[in-house]
Length: 275
Length: 287
Image (cartoon, rainbow over all chains, first blue to last red; front, side):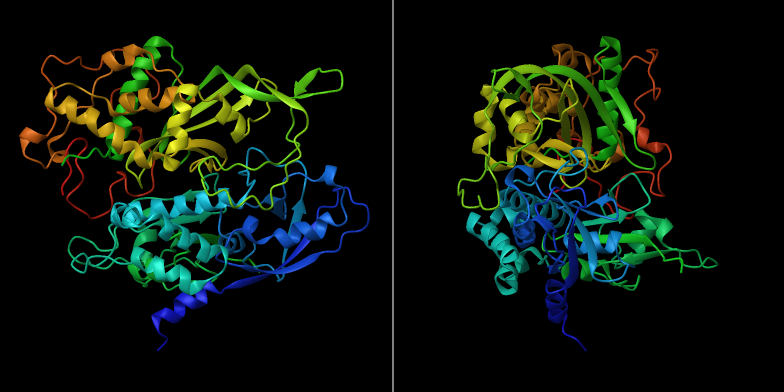
């Protein structure tokens, strides 16, 4: 049987082959070739696409360059969502490589957050970790860490260093034995067919009478639409890191092993493909 | 040690009471609800802010369009991450101008506090960037924001609308709310959590809270089930407290009912499904 630690590695090293194409209306001095890259599921678009920018800068004039942003089939991609989540949510059932369009103009102000430097990504990442710990441990673990420990979490993500990251992150995955799990599970359920970007609520991993809550329990409580009734065929896929975990999987286990580095379980609910 | 967490139901009740007073003042607050989800308070207002404008060769200024990227590291002392930020600022000046603000008050279940979201745009409809918002913060408050990284203003996704807003980070709310709530407890005074909280954070981002809110808006009534602590430690409303007027005209709901009791996914209350003890509405919290 696979060791649980192997799961952590598999999740960390997940990659998505991607093809970046320049938007046709961008002004270029010569034709822009597409650029191919393996994107880490764990990371954030603006953190790992410096090469993409440099590639297209070669064929563009400086005055035609503003902040880079991306879209997939007309949907602007939120850099502050983990890459793996963006793929699962928007491109799960499309052919690889994932085809992303690159823009340097007409930044969609209402829909996208600006990302002028890596400090912004770091602040966002640490903010998510802090929020997750508020849910798991009333912020006690994250507040007990020193600034250099926080930095280690960020550097581990930025430099793709699994051991460096987990040396610190394991503390955020601990809980008092008598509790049986975290206080609340940090999760977000993302929907494609709703104006609302995600659902996030308080949910305990263990009920007061000691019953272990599963993924199915969570969905039944906060988004029952995702679970078909007995007589219905399945209409939705519930995807985490590109897979559909069994609904019987304990939520506590999912939180410890399938969370993103920001310590959140990012769950996509997408329609089952019709063909 | 008492802490001051706010559960979602009390949040809604406090908001409704604030809303009633707002209606009486024509102060512009409304309650919004995204279909099938939680509600929030909303208000738009005109204010002043410092916006950028480009100077052309004749020295005439025009409303600046987003034409450059820039490096922002307000809250990061180790400014080592400037890579990737192109900085080609055109000649421009910053001036005081009229700004359209939109404020939302949402509930954060992670921090069990309210959170203030806002966005700002010029009268021509151009969204202000973070730097301009920063410049618009009154100098009195700027120092406080700079010294404490987690109190800073950042751009975030609105959790119900999915659009870009600016946010005052909520994780230190407890620090300034606790002394106020504690004092109110000891002095048997009524405190509406939202009014008190807003009067602290609002002015930082240009939102004024008229004094009558603090004197006229009551605390929501406490139900026995929400105060599992011994009576001496839970706030008792004094018998002479002003009751919410039951006859005042108010859309959307008639009395301090949490509006979230209207159509919701299965769990009609925001409490976790089968857990007890519940955190009390206000005041002390089980250890």
